[in-house]
Length: 172
Image 1 (cartoon, rainbow, N blue to C red):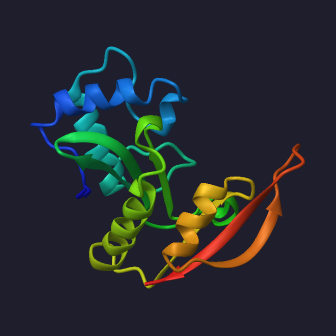
Image 2 (cartoon, rainbow, N blue to C red):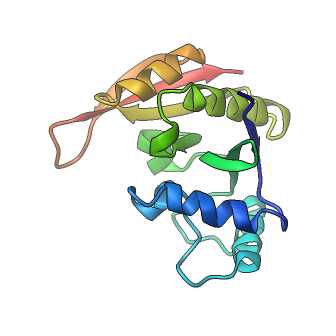
């Protein structure tokens, strides 16, 4: 199975809305930070272009690339790649956040998304290392990060919770 990770283009509207259905069992942000019901696909593309170039960002946001994972023309996951880290992302969010649609989990998709995201960070963004975080009890994500060269720096207690977030650095 070949995974293609890339930004959306004007020909991806049908795939985007089909993918949205696959993510219906999750919070909408797991699929897209920008899309809102009723929004045109053209508007979504404009917002994603602005976010990539750092235009019209909300105060807590940083420039980022939203890339979607395609398998046989279908969107099965996504990766949000933050081009730089603010204080919050340095602590909890990291450079890369990824998600896989529930029906496509446990098939190696997350590992491939992270691998391709790391290549993007190295080749496009010219980063030399990235921070990737996950909840300590998310064993699938822990395995994915370790398979891609993650080195655990520390664990941070999540405010108001009894859980920790693992912080991993990956050299590119």
